[in-house]
Image (cartoon, rainbow, N blue to C red; front, side, top):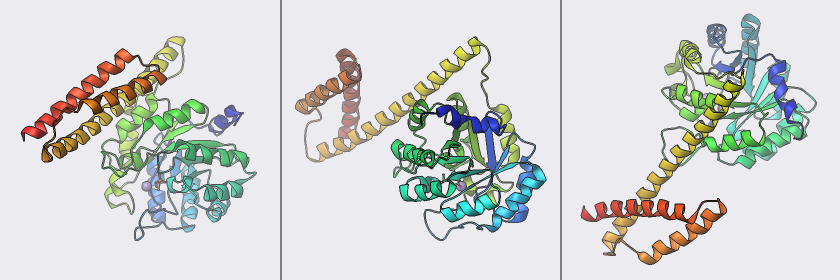
Length: 360
Ligand code: PEP
Ligand code: MN
């Protein structure tokens, strides 16, 4: 991936606006639905129409897509509105159909990115074409798997690449359907600054009310685009009903989102500062979440100690923790003094938590 610049240019070559807005339903349902939504979107900032034709569902028994038939409906939508088209491909056969129907951009779904064999099969099927491909992050939080997929396409000579951040599944219940784990996307962006990075807030959120905030965070982190599931009747959508928004909501959202422009040096400074601050906000948020999780475990230990009539303070264990953390801190360039302060405060909070458990 020596020639990073070339990965970027297809967005410019296709004269796609910054940020690129991709919108459309989770799934193509009927010809009327695809045409209706395309006409509603054509006067918004969305320049690319998305619709899933083959739907990977985690569990069987849900709507699995209309299949290749839907590609004709999409083509018609393009003829009538001028919007570009994108759909998900999950095997070589899908690629063949999509190429035949002149789909402009292909995307690789999160459940496909996890499988090197299938990624290779799709990359081979695209060899020698200049079709842009957007690779969603794998379902599990593994940066190398995501990068591996990018590398497989790149090695197959598919050079017009980009990535879509759609969040990562967790066993724990969080406010998100898929945890954003912004840090993983930021790491990828740091390694490949010219690889277009697009946010899919819909699959991260799993609900409508936090889509805007997710998009704003992404723009503050200098993402290149957004892919937002949009339906004129979200509640009755055949898939992902809870997370789709209406075209008019998307339209208002793109007005309200603050998009930073790169003009003067002062603006560039402000942009860099604000990007760095957003990164810090993301990490601070993670710190609080981690501390919260740590205290919940402390509560469990408190209950255990109480049941077994063991004292809250265990000096030996505490000194072991401190020793380990000081050593780990050194590796991260953190002073012993700082580590002592932080861990004493954490320890005190743990003791307070356990004392509350004891008193109950
Ligand atoms: C989709 O975009 O509708 C979809 C199935 O996405 P993901 O692969 O991110 O789950
Ligand atoms: Mn969906």
